[in-house]
Length: 562
Ligand code: FAD
Image (cartoon, rainbow, N blue to C red; front, side, top):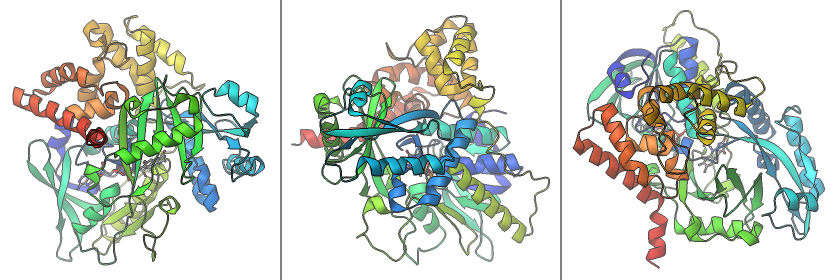
């Protein structure tokens, strides 16, 4: 089955069992589950997969230790169970990470109290955490995490959660859905709903965001998985009579060089001013810090870091890492995302943002539109299963009974890059295989990068390099991203715009010192060749990418303006 976006658009249309709107982790998870159960599925994403919150999270697959403070035990239990499942079905993308929780003599919560919370956390995972927590003494902390302020430290519990590549986790769900027969179309925006005589939603008009063409998709059930756009999507069908479903909050992260802030573990910090919890997270040759949490009412497409956000994060970092003070100039990149949080029922904006529940809700409107709102990246699979169960109920009520359906199998079946992944989770062994498959043409760092990014599919990229050495060329000197990733993105991973490749397929946007701008000519030329762009299209793509970079650097204009 082709994994090219143009073929997906060609196949879009007609009548299917399920239409999914939104290609974030929720929509892609729903499409994967439904297609694997045997439903015919179309997924429409108005931008690239994971364009929204699903590429702008803290990139953690975690139980959410801090939810224990709000006594949300069931939420934590559900999340740690899902963490276990994701470690099994996506071991190449979900990696155990130590979290160090420094407790100082003047901390409001004493060490014994935090420790008790850790036992509870390990217990809720039925003691199947990636590793059980330990408590480090100040000397051990000094040795393990030399950048951390150890003055007046009582000790630091070290517990384990997981890190991930959120956008790739999302993409692999989309690719697996496609493998199971779904049509998953990016840059395909739902513009309006099609309704029957009873005013029930029975499909949608979809616009190709590249060519402007319009198609109609008819469906027996339609699911709204549009994250921060949820209320806008609902409003396409009916007036929001009882107020918005969501109360989105903005979260910003900043990326700096690892040398500027060298971390071994993720560090849990509390902001010195408002005591909010933040993380410093090691990210290969970079470190990122996040997140802020502020109410947001604007267009989700415009969300960006402000100078105030950046300064807030730098201030928190200075309190914990006084010998590694960051300046604004150290910030390589930023990202800003919106938490699609449920609006608290019967309450107003006097609720503290961080206290708003992360749990999800599935709502079936009188118009038949199924909306899923809220949730977390970590629990997407379980949420998706619930949505598909709801959709099946609706199909049966409507007397449409698809045949030969299978039970949900997403907890057992590996995502594409995990097929054949070693039982002992040995990333280095896979990297060696990748290098061999390239006939030794790829350097160690590149082979490691391909193994960690694509899992076992890294071997297929390496084989391309074995056939054509030019594809092993680095996109940026000294960095591990290589040209074959551009080919792979366009031919096997549904990439269609320059920004798809620069931001989410390669992450050059976040990781490279000049956000990949130096690599743009090479990547744009290659994409033009592969996708048949003329000069005007190529120029437009480059301008589009520059705009994206500009938005992420908008906060710098505030600095310049004084
Ligand atoms: P989105 O990813 O936003 O997807 C919605 C999609 O719908 C978008 O891609 C959008 O383009 C598309 N869309 C909208 N309208 C239309 C239309 N008309 N037609 C077609 N497509 C449309 N969770 C964790 O588990 N771990 C974390 O570490 C974590 N950290 C977070 C940090 C921050 C700062 C934030 C903001 C969230 C974090 N979360 C985390 C939560 C998690 O990221 C989100 O719950 C999750 O990504 C939401 O996914 P989604 O698919 O519902 O929404």
